[in-house]
Image: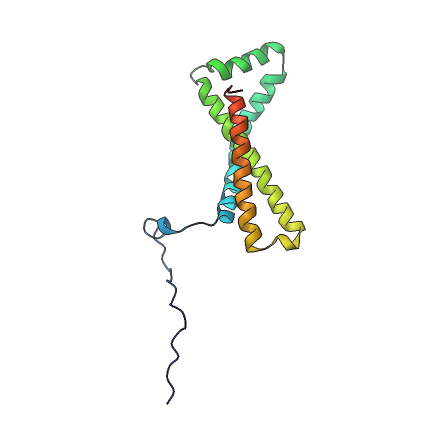
Length: 148
């Protein structure tokens, strides 16, 4: 009679109820997924730090005295907030802007060029996005912390 055909490949594991502690720890996110999540995180971070950006802009352009206070805040601190913490917040803002901008350019390129919508291009452009944004953040962070 007829025999049942055996599947040619092994059955994939089926996730119906995902346990955050046991299932998600072993999952490897591809670089394109990481860039997508970080694109959202950087957008939220820029939105949340908008009052800090407005304060920096207002303090730096109001007068020469306020600009001197602005520079002193980054060097010696502002009240109970130490200067290094303000520099870290500014560095987070720098990273958020650079990553969001570069990832946005990547998304625009994939929207315009239909040849850019492939698994290989997504992987390589995601790695390039991560590398460029981190490299530029390190360079500008070195300038922010006075290394050059």
